[in-house]
Image (cartoon, rainbow, N blue to C red; front, side, top):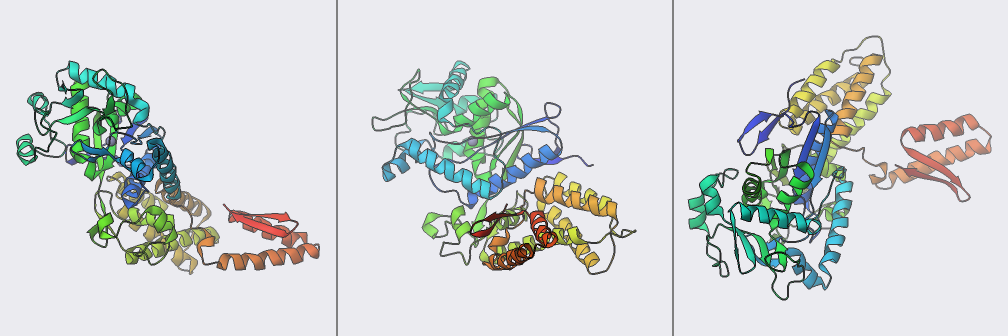
Length: 487
Ligand code: ZN
């Protein structure tokens, strides 16, 4: 099997993946700031790093996947100014900040489950790790890379840059950054406009506040990820992921914080997924193209022509390489839905193919191609193209062109199941999605079973129940008649 190659944002090239500890992988991914409904911008990193998590486990690595929930410190403006995003939402909706957090965390979990992403191993929150963040600030202060002004603590980017290279992840140059940063009002207490907050003193009206050696206040947004990744994965770990929009300033600041507190970098491989546009435009509330995931699932949005199955969204996202942009449109989603249906139908067809003595299928060749594509920096579009080569061959065999023997059929079934379900995380589309047709057909089938039972034809009745069972449809008899459910 070829080595797994990952594109490292820091080195700007593909590198062979070697875990720090044999047989184990530690991965940290920046999660959502929970002040609104999840949208496509959340689905992409959710699915991208879910596939990484699934594949690492498929390769046999004991994988610890940490994805945080930001519930404090992310200000409306990335330059440390303005209201806290969660506090603002709480003020507008007249709720406690933690009510906002609880509500949108639950909603995020529900949407991620619909997309069939596995829950992370640990999901720490920023408010749950104030002590660790304060301890990290103390270390950075002790090492001389931060300073306090009137209860606020700032990271001294210029001082840090004398000893380390600030800007190496994003490729930015500190002099350009300084000349490009406007000195916003209220930032004058910073030594340099590029410095960022590690701790902010809370204004009298600010609700979310904690005691600290400097003031009653709250941590800076970038700090939580450094503190929590160190706590759960150690001062050095394998993979740090997130969206490309986080490279600067968030991840650049994380690198600086780790080096300033521990003297070395924390992350071996930086992975970043690209962004999603809608009909060629950046998604934004002002453009009227801001579509939440639950709106995609229900179809209730002006820009949507129909409701989309969560698996269609997942399949659509996986049809592009995670480092490429993806453009959503109704046409593209409909095409993805067709492709997904065709793939799932071929798996059913394969199940029904009668085996013969000979096989015209080279399962080893498929296996090689599947692994080669996923090992090439998670090239899911190429993997899906190879899956469709298999679909084509399965359909030809079903049409009488070619054959499968028992072992080839078993191996091909296993291989496709590993890649479609375990690694890509796809699920069979539910039959209920087909406009009530399933309900009508089931009524006929259960009617036949009822007649068979009335005639004491137990063979037929049991046959119907067992065959439905194979389709994960459970039939239960009740006083009102038979009830069916599909898993
Ligand atoms: Zn983060």
